[in-house]
Picture 1 (spheres, rainbow, N blue to C red):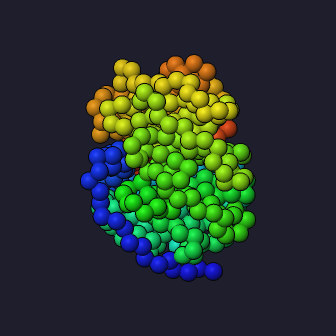
Picture 2 (picture 1 turned 45 degrees about the horizontal axis):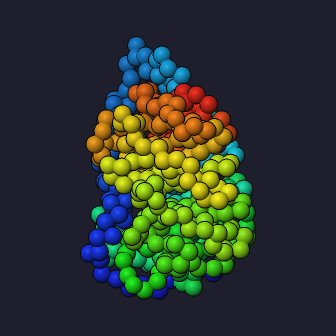
Picture 3 (picture 1 turned 180 degrees about the vertical axis):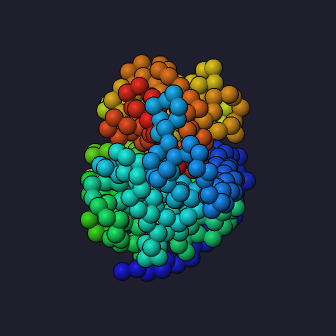
Length: 420
């Protein structure tokens, strides 16, 4: 059943100084989307020129490639697979044999083969109800996509919400629609990040990180993964949920990063019962506008995105205790936008230049045991440009760029392929 949700009133934008943390975090996202728009315009011009040249014919003595054979960059173990179906990509998910990319501008999902980089399909049927899709989670045979209802050019808490807010569930094997969840009783309001744990789907309402109001809002929504029904709603001001920016889920817990109002924190919630395990609050600047979060083994890794104070905080999963805070040194961190962890590796993406510092368009790898820097991946042939989200899967590392996906070797950081 699909029911159009009711409109929601949004409180006027606050002048509370504590709101600065949230504005700062969300400003990064708006700048990234602006850059995406510029990149898309340039790309369109290039495509048109190439099409005109193709129509004009290729000289018989041309050394250009033929057919659909990928072009390999000379002197590098890097191939380039052209898939002209990325349109403002903002999120990425990997499961089994395929990679899924969310196209916010194109209201679509691009699926390509993880082994070959070849296009599987572009999903954008009207029935899928994609409307500025924002987040993705792939779990087993299902793919969950949030539709954030964010209009381009709008960045304050006063823009219209709820009209198109929903969660689209797809069949991972063939991309077919399973259901669109947008019953008004679910209280989805500009949903953003999404995570799946067993039979539970967890969705953050992104508007709660942008709006300041004394009335508790619906910060976190839990859905039943088997039928999409509402399980419970978590309010702002409860369980430490205030200005929640991101989340991740394991078999036992859901971890949510919060950056508002008077201090940064991480909420740990039991993924089976929905009960609060603990709220881990910032001490001595250990958490500064925490956003991206990843869990691997005994540790939780958090990317702090406060401008000028980029760092990675490590916590213990067993008790939430602080392990270390890894500060930027010699420009090794710059505009942290994504984080992934697996085994002895932790990776963070460094954005493309909206903060001071020279280390942009790169991925920093840390040693998960010591927190020390292993390497900075930024060779020109890696195709890293405006890297945002990052996902570790098997022996591969997938990095989402402004309009492409870079595939790296997770063991040594070497480049393998750029899908664009």
